[in-house]
Image (cartoon, rainbow, N blue to C red; front, side, top):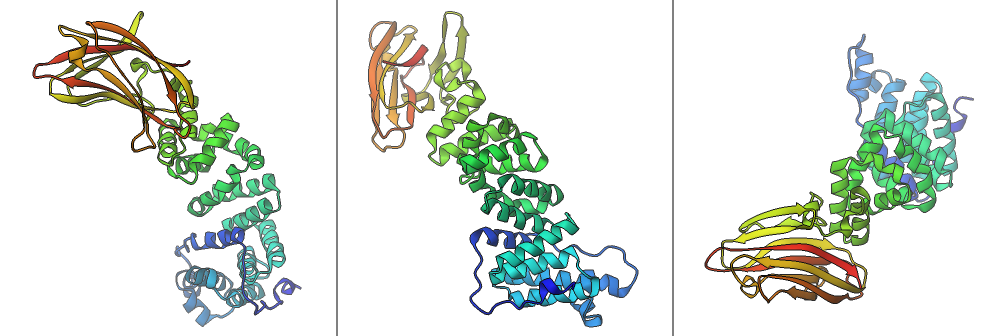
Length: 405
């Protein structure tokens, strides 16, 4: 009776395993085969350190058969002969009765052979006998999610990742489509909100992985409680990753969420370390930010000649009409000599200048001007530029604002 589950021969037809099951198989390949610790007999030592030797001594050695099955799968991958795995499992069970490791290997054999229902039965029985085997939980997780039982699947996944950290590299990519699904997000958000170690590790993975960052950002937008798995470093990283992946709107949303809608303000005094949406000051000359009750801005002294970049940052304005306003001032010279101007351009276009604002009269002037952000321009670069002279040139720019017209 104990062999009833295993007597069916693997079909000789073409082996086909769905992509969701291939992930479970690949999980085995990520598991290291543990080396032996102190044991009592040569046979007990050999079954761990050299299962082939153990099987030569005792072909029915259950543990050696289990390890050989894993080694065979690790070497053959998806091209492994399912009959070979089945033979190892049968010998193991014949000696040790039904044991979870052998059942797990038999389940993989059925998976490779395309016998999903048979594999499911073996993995379920293995899971009932022991919850220590990560591959069993991963397979059942994939199976549950495919069947629409996300809650049950995530419970299995949580248990597996708490048991074996080594599964993360294989499992994390499979979580991307799960958190990308609006229906599944509601299920996984409470799990992330618990802030387990593996969930925080996933946050670190998603923050720097272009394929995962958009899904993670949408999950945080829909379920803010899940953002607990992103510490300050990861929050900055996910903004940069989204920006590099051309997910400009999402990058801006994450910046706003973690900065209290700071992106809508252009104050130099609120400059932080959130690239590319915070001001980055130029390297030339002397720059200082001032924050006074009646005036906020930046003061600068340019020592070199030619065009000098004073500050720059990115914006994500929607297409439409806007009003630009700012006050410029210069010491000892005329604004025309200072050559101060603010240039706004489409960052995703080679020649995408939207507008340029400049001051030309007197020693202080407030400028108000309208401009239009065209469609197809989701990301804008704003640059503050001045012209250096033979002698040092000093000036200031304050009360910079961009508002819908």
